[in-house]
Structure formats: C-alpha cells, structure tokens
Length: 196
Image 1 (cartoon, rainbow, N blue to C red):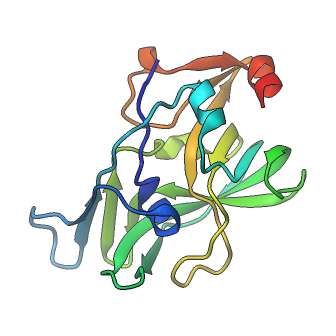
Image 2 (image 1 turned 90 degrees about the vertical axis):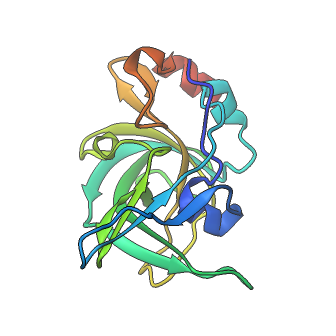
C-alpha cells in the first residue's frame, strides 16, 4: 500500500492552503520559447482510510469524466510573496454521488489535473495523478479542497488531494503517477461507498 501523498497539494492547492517544497524554474536549459517549472511536494499516506480522514477535504465526490480541456497556465501571487506559476488540464467531472461539499448530483465539477504545457511554460510534478487517469468515461472518486478561482481562471475549480479510479468492482488509488501498480491501494466499490 502506498504510504505517501503530496503536501504542496500540488502548487495550485498550495495557493489555497500553503506551499511546501515547490521549486521555481528548473536549471536545465529549455527551448528558447519554453520555460520549465518543476514542482516537488512531499507525499502523505494515500490509503483509503487516510484519504477519507484528510483534514482539507471540502469535496468528496464520485463521478465520470465528461470532458478534458486544453492545458491552462495560471499565476497567483500570495500576499507578500513571489508569483507562483503552474499549468494544469481542466477536467469536467459529472457528479454521480456527493459525499462531502455542495456539488449536487448531476452537476459538473472542474478538477485540475496538474502538469502540462501552455503559453510557453512546461510545468511538471511527479506527485500528481497521471494524465490518463482523467480520460473521458473514467469513473473516479475525487477528494479535493475548496473550489477556488486562481489567476484568470474563468470558473472555480478544485485541486484533488487523492484520486481513486474504478476498475471493475474496485477503486484503485491513482493519487501518484509514479506508484508501481503492485503497490497501489485498492478497495471494493461497496466498501469505499460504505466508508464515505
């Protein structure tokens, strides 16, 4: 079972709850028109029990990915701090069960899938779900912080703390892209729903 989770809550979550270990532009040379920002975060336990108990879960929803938009670049400057930049992919999740938060069944919730390239910035982070986790038609349980609007975002979105993907009659922990498949936590659909 994977016993790690990111505390930067990805850089965008960091805008909402505080940063921990996010890096600036990488020292490695990049193409002239592209800058690279690497974010690093420490990981926390992503087991089902820990995901359920996580202190900053404002939203816990189960739904199906309906759409994936082009990568979007955002910049946020905390009071008295330097600008933080990130790129993410907006993912539309149709809510089918709402366990926590005000996302009604049938509503659409925008989820930030961290990483990508937009407007001359390539943003990488290893402590985030793999991009293919958010493929259209995929059924997920997302544990996320508050909805917020960052930079010039057109609408509020959530940054996930933990993501579980349905595979058959189980949910599989997809919180970290770099977790070996054999180490991923799994829980039956019925058991996770009962715990939520």
